[in-house]
Image (tube, rainbow, N blue to C red; front, side, top):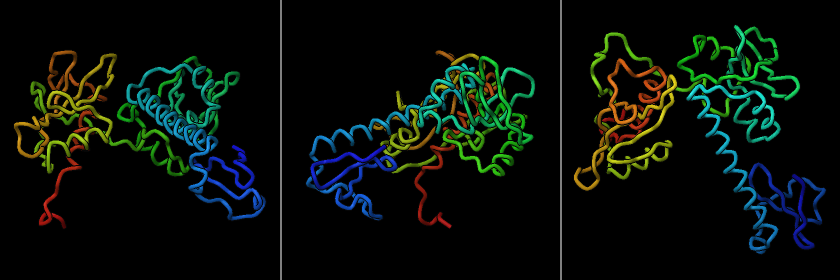
Length: 287
């Protein structure tokens, strides 16, 4: 984005998402970029540019959220749609280097390009750049990637930095020997917080909802939508705040642990672990 004149003395621009100013008289010199002076902050040009910067920030967050939904749900995404949004920097930052799986056998790689005429360009595990010409691709949840360890090693060699957490996303697999008829997991229960409100704020900051004394998240797994839930009690009856049991529901029905799919299991454990990690730790327990 270029520089916009504000009066006779200053020019403004967006630099790395922030509105900055420089002296018009010193526009060709180095080191002149600085914060917007107070005398300019109410000027229409500055206000509109700041609003545009805020819109860009919201747009980038919305792109990340949408791509995250596609990935967590492992939904088929039309290749043509990716080609249409690819020129947008916010979309491209969210999509670039995600592991995608095409319709053909062995079509797996890190997404590097999307073009309506040439399909999707990916770097496969042999280090070759290939084109995927199928109508759709999926961005699998990492718990569904059989070569996850190999992908992580290869990503490190390539210097891959994903805009949406996928291959380095924390994952959990349902352990062997678990009581399949049980309906709750207690592994992360009992995390103490200073108050219920601190706990609910932690949940909100992680992107989860708080409703009816529970922290909840929704996950699409195997064609059905599952609600993951961690009990957190009632702020008006419970002293302090603490996490309770983890459970899963499909509709109104609570699922037995044997009925929970791999993605729902992993995402549920990830949510419970994140809430547990934010607990209050007594000073005498700190190493």
